[in-house]
Each structure stands twice: as structure tokens, then as C-alpha cells.
Length: 291
Image 1 (cartoon, rainbow, N blue to C red):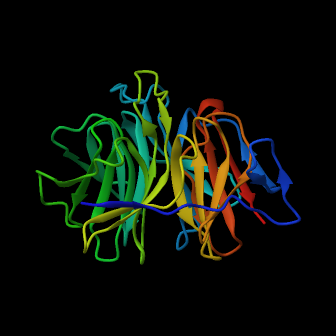
Image 2: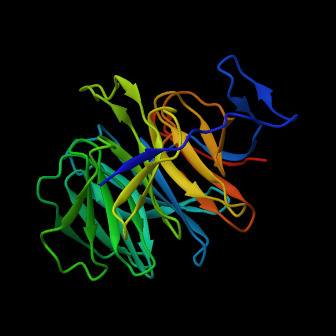
Image 3: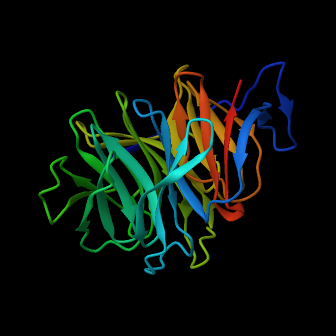
């Protein structure tokens, strides 16, 4: 595995508000907010059912207390119920056809998105399973932020021992996104401590599965968490540690929306270019648009 570095241009437009760190900031429009979800970590929009799945930890990120679950919100933010409850500390959510895949500490929860029936697959050596993404063939990718492994699971879910890729250059991978470009990885940073602080900030990387090469696409940005691609081809990336949403647009990076600490794993609706942002430490989920 090799790694190359592409220098980014931190530039904006005349509409940007330039901050003291030199990274342009753009305004965002808040559409709605909910303040009653217990430690929300991840949001995923279902364009067929027109609902938003939100993983609710309701406790610490490694607590095995069966208090967590997956909530269902309407596309306008109304709570419609729980798809699954009695999980531990669910985080990232991925979807392939009628199946949802949810990372839950050291196991994957495989859920029917219509009726909530589910089963579990334990992941050997897992300590802190975090984000989930699915490629076009149904292979599921799951990051482990503590071990640094990225696990792969076939869509049929029959494999009990998951294979994995190691990313020495992304020691604490968090957010994952599969696209035609490859596997995008949002890094948490170097030298993670027990309180999840880091010695160095994380960056955005791109993994080419065919060539097994990993390319750093940005300089260090923050403790990166969620990542989605919008209809304009931009990547939207949250910074959990510093707060806010970065936009990566063909090599340019700007902080599009500034928040408090805890901006977690985002969801996205293509119809109207809407972002669903869990604020994990505030028990809040918001819908917003970014120009």
C-alpha cells in the first residue's frame, strides 16, 4: 500500500466569510430541528420510504446496556417511532436494497427496513465499530476507530468471520463513503487518547480497492466523522471535535457551517439538497441546506 499527498487549496468565493484560520465559511439555512433524541450519532435518508433513520445511542459510545436503537423520522422531522430498540450504542448506518446495516460496538446489526426484524453478526477483534457504507455490489464496509481496521461483509451476511483491510496511514478511520471514485475515508486523527482527543487532526483520504493505494486528499482538518456526497458532486464532511461541516469540492475545502462540538454522522436527501445533521452531545438532529 502506498500513500501520496495532494495539497489542497483553502479558497472561497466573494460570498464567503473568511475566518481567522483562513478557511472560508459559508452560511447555511436551517429547515427544522429536533431536541428529543438521546445521543443521536448517525442519520440516513431513505428516498423510497421518505423517512430518516437515526441511530440513538442513549449513553456512552461503548456501553453495552441495550438502551440504544434506530429511530424513524418523517422527512419533515416528525418522530414516527422506533425501527429497532434494545441495541447497545448504535452508530453508522448503511443500506443495500431492503436491508440496513448498523454498527453496534463490536457487532453488525442487519435490519429489514420495513418491519424491523433483525439479526446480529459479531466482528472478531472489534472494539469500536463506527461508520458503515455499501458499494454497488452489496459489499458492506465498516470502520473500527480504535483498531484502525476497515472490515468487509458480503451482502448476504453469511460470513461470520469478516475479512478486513488495514490502513496504516489512517490509524483511526471514522466516516466511510463508497462512490465511483473508490472508498472515501474521513480520519479521526493521530494518537487518539481515551477521551477521544488526538495528538493530530484527521484528513480526508481515498482508497482505490483495485490498486490497493491510499491517497491523502486534504491536509489535516479535524476529528472527521460523517461524510456524504451531494448532487453537485461535493463531499460534505463533519468535524466532531471542532464542530461544523466542511465541504470538499474538487480539491478546494471550506467550512460551510460552524457548530458546537459533536457534529456527527450526516445523512443527505438529493431531492432538495438537504443535509441531516445529528448533534450528538446536544440530543439534537437538524435539517439544513448549504449553498
